Length: 241
Image (cartoon, rainbow, N blue to C red; front, side, top):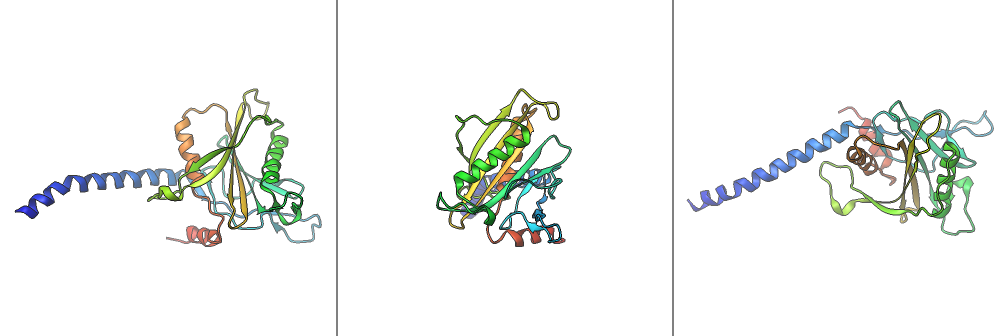
């Protein structure tokens, strides 16, 4: 009788946990449907066109962008000399830009040809490339702020969130081609591995549902992996299930 009473007392808690788990899985499935497959690694064509295309980045990147932006680089790689900033875009009114490189420790020895940059140079080159692309100017008063994105998983672990540096620019004056827009920049560094990446989203300045947009961007950022596991992770995603 005592065991039955204890079991009865624990049933509501068990059902509550099951309801929470079902809700979490449903939310994960919903966001999963709003993300494309992992991006494919972009390439650049050397000046000598007889040479084969070369990887744009010095290491593999696993990243899933919002549905509609695609998985392949859009048109040619937009680059600043030896700093490839790759564009992914579709018909959604959004675009994404990604750049990746190794971290160079010394400020006096950026090795652009080897995709090595100090974090300061890397961030500056990303901003300069976007400024030229959209003919805008970031204010010198703007500062990067910490931004935390949870790992995209059906069973998230709050202790393993990804820590980014974030900056946002809004151009309310608009333009003849894309109108009013905003640029969201996110920088991530893996200091132990000596790798860094920049992810930028260009989107309409005014959002109909800011909360939904934020959840979508967080989900995309949460898929990021620049570890040595990135290639196998991409292969596993594409493997028939």
